[in-house]
Length: 57
Image 1 (cartoon, rainbow, N blue to C red):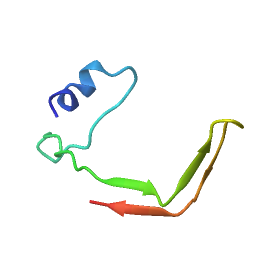
Image 2: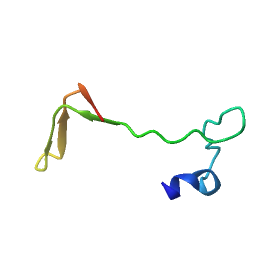
Image 3: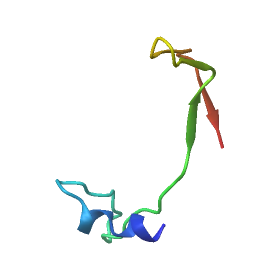
Image 4: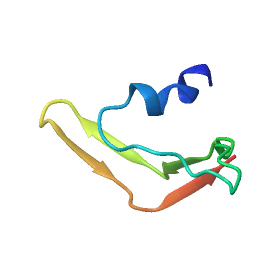
């Protein structure tokens, strides 16, 4: 979380966080999305991913 607070000052580019009307950065919210299944074939160097997504908390 500490590094998150430094992202704007350390970023290359124009990254800005959403701020409220007082100029305060809105707290970070964590979420997780993951594919329902996926397989990596090392021999063929290919992968197959089911495009359905699960929402975790």
